[in-house]
Length: 503
Ligand code: ADP
Image (tube, rainbow, N blue to C red; front, side, top):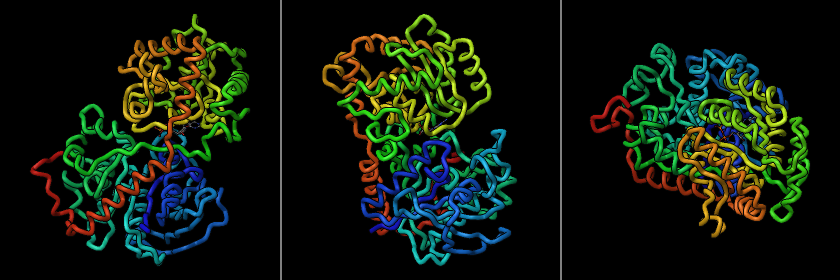
């Protein structure tokens, strides 16, 4: 039975800002079900400590160069027996609010120090140096907040190997060189073939350069990040490591996202009782103060209001719907500019547009269950979860042909209608014209109720389970462990990049 330490900066339901939390809240349970002895390690944020009062203390220790004691506390993930180790160091993590940004949306000024501390603690756990009497065979790191771990582990011959998962390459953990000098990291790590990135410290390079294997959350995104368009200047490094880079699409947590059992929606339904979905539509229209109208095509969006998600395209679309039988409801937070523009549009057109600025788990479920169409015009999308939830809820997604959206939604064409594979609408260019064309196509097919039902049912049949994805992760772990047992230790000073620099 493989022992896996799963390092993450968020995990549902303890703390969530985005898709990583959904992955970290479900994949470890699926891996445990497949026989892994898996433990999650997560910072003990203020909000987590406040909600989880009776935590067990499992270790106490000091880190060289860090003032104050570090306490490892433990809880369990949801109803499972997956252990969560919480790194409790109040100066770094006990503040209230978002894990990464302050109340003005600005990154916490000490993020580099906070997540370096997190990574150093993970290193100690990985080496079994905190008296847990448990040494992982492999450390699975996720995104930049835990990306220094592979670099730290590569310094030590007896350290376990690591897997680094990229959930979003746009977030890299970049800091000035002066910050690097204060973090107590090995000076040799300041090099273009290590953590340096054009004169800055890049956390994510710790994972991209030093992890034994790298994966991302869809096959398509694994290819896209090797191109200048989506590689953020890291495409050279990723091309160089393409032999250890792969994609595994995320699953969805069937216990949380299932229209048959979802307790957060007005009316449960399944693919055999689809007409009941309309009850959720009417409830949603009421909630958003839109006119009750079963026949209007109700579009929805849930997510971060940032450029990545194509919010500008949605805004442009909303300016063109006045003469159409369309309604739209949105839930999200993000850039102030988008929030203001969307709120203004809703005020100007209250019969067609409803906007809720905020984070609301229950409303997210109600939207998935209530709308006819879910919009995801993302400029890039590593995996995307909402299109998967939509498919599960018989809600037809309209998506841009990128990343995980391309991997998971099948466009509606005469052929895919005929062979019962069509699940949504996929457009190729991130332009308002292309989005509008898909919306027009959806409007047309929506009037053909039998074909529309086909799309809904095809989507509901699609299997994006964590069990399936977890099996792929397990294979990847086994490959890493197998390679590790036959390979000699290479210290990072010996890493060769065929003369390439400037990664
Ligand atoms: P990303 O990780 O880029 O934010 P994903 O689609 O992978 O996007 O995952 C986003 C997750 O966060 C989904 O589960 C989505 O429902 C949820 N989410 C995003 N914004 C909100 C919000 N305002 N209220 C409730 N849930 C939200």
